[in-house]
Length: 100
View: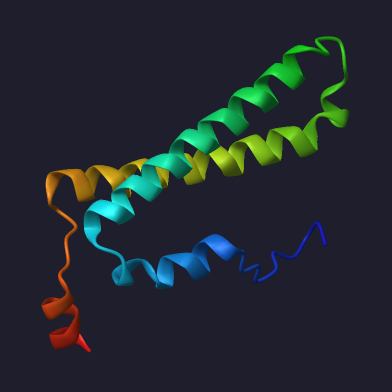
């Protein structure tokens, strides 16, 4: 389990497949809500790590990994949100119908 990455497919990537079914402004709102939630989770992990300053890193590895993955997702969600906000990423129902 440690050495070989597995093909994990959590719910969020599955939800991204359905993103085109939402209007872009709704997608933006939902992604911004997710970014806020991710930020909250990261802050909670930071507080938990800070609450045990003398604990060996060995016992914090799981928290560090979780924080790193949440941070990577947050950065990605923020980039998609920024593209939606600026119009760099946009779609319409007509465009989707023509694309398939």
